Image (tube, rainbow, N blue to C red):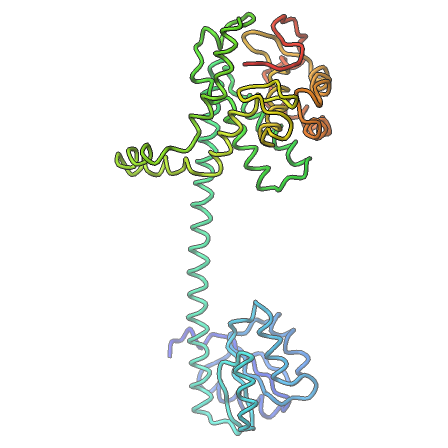
Length: 393
């Protein structure tokens, strides 16, 4: 018998002290040294919690709490669900044995105890427990590895999202901090509205891709310092559709072509079917819609506009107002709050505005932490800002 098994802890519970001593003596003679014993059934459950034995030898008939009742309590505790329990009984009653099996007994010993049977049953129970412990350890190792790899994949995904959003933002904002601030404003607002934490996280991540379509807008328009012409404005508004198309799932034919190219290509484009990118596409095309129906590209009104687009709209406009751009200087934070509130029920969903304005202190902290130096405190001198507070760029 492996020496390691002799180091395992054995618990003996019997209301007769002589029986406890007899079992312990027989096991000690075979090399076992670690014992927990009790003659009080009321102490069994507490001792299990405190000493965590590897096998329990439990008498069926005991005053107070009988062995079968204890066995039922043991099996209801997930910590002891796999503890080997050897029931000791002087009865050959079939009903007692069947009930013991139903309650989860591992094995039986008949009184008077036979030393050979005792050692064999205890050894087998310890082997079983040892194998279970090894499997549990292996499962925990695998679980930890899966958790680690999942965290790595999540970190890579978030980094990719940020890089995609920042790539578009670098076209007209050299710091790229806009996408971070918008994501954080969106998370604050969504949480204040009572949305599910998983949804808050998803919104925070996907809203960073709201201006992905800027990659398709010419620099002559995107970086123009003055007010856009009507024709230029129309082109600028096209960034919503461009972003939506860029983030939309591939068609089956497109996906097959990319999958045939390389394994990496397959993995990348399969991700296009993910809820994350579907939400990002929705935000990209809907964040310039207006509550009163005068927005673009679809002219949606009220709750026709997806909630994710309504939330991102407030965060995006607020940050556009409070940050410097090639065509405008920053507006002071307090004035930005007033402008957002003035558009409640017109440009923006009233409930979203209320939730956003309820987070003013947190918004200020984000603007300060991720802001462009002192720009957020500058006075606005640009004649190109729209009276409504909407920035088409």
